[in-house]
Image (tube, rainbow over the protein chains, first blue to last red):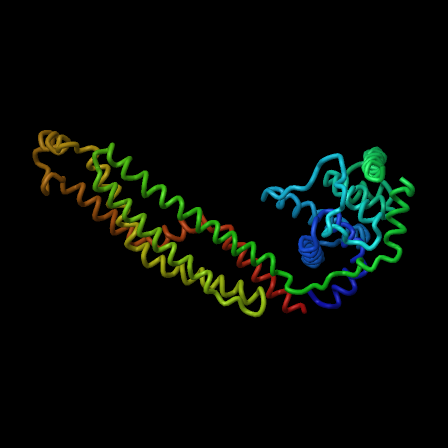
Length: 164
Length: 216
């Protein structure tokens, strides 16, 4: 991968790639693996980019697909993620990826969601329209609307329980 | 909850220093580890299969009245297993190299060397397996020489060498020669069945890494 390609086509979107990878990983080591795999996949698939959508949309799509695939592989290997409806009392040290404690808590709550719900809420929080989210995830805008309100409710509940 | 999730998100990322991209280096480190693990796992599965068959075959042959053939097959399998273990030890002595690419190249070369050595052994291994299988079939058919006696009665003109009709011997000889001749192909087919996908992935990964280096 050339330095130019990385700096021009990946680095400007590093923020969103990091946000997505953080939502699908539990520790720094996994996070770095996922990040690298996403970058590689973007480089590999540059020849398939037909400019039918914005480059940023392409990057979102690849990042989500790579994270979902890696997560599936990891689950297959027996390493599962927590699925309970209660957040742990203390967010694990390795999950304290951000300086802001509320953000760490929000991430911990997001990791409790299903893989697809995680993708939906990340894109929603990145202020993508329902139409754009639907385009990236291959579903309808209506479906996204319904999902977003349901996910927000669940996240609110998880965070409230944690705070009370 | 004091703030909405949208506010937590926005405010949280306002001055977030952890959004600095991690350094991209040694991109294929994890990948090469996975490939090595997969090859080792396949070696292990193969070995377990060999050992299980080495135990099961004499039992099956006992019921077929061909115990010696069962023991021979078992010994042959155990020898194969021992050879596999010795070969597999080589993977730990591989040059880790400066980069993942160096390591994958040496892994690929090591695999090619193992295959080339094993091909030579397969020249004798497959014909021996064929002869043992043929001998088992003959023993199962010809319990206490009944089959030979009946054949001699039905076909009095047939030439026998001991208890074995010469035509059966001819089939055995021709079969053995053919298997000896095509052992390399049979071995490659055998290996492709077991390790094909992982070999393909290894070569594809090396090609991709070389392309990455060219682009850099």
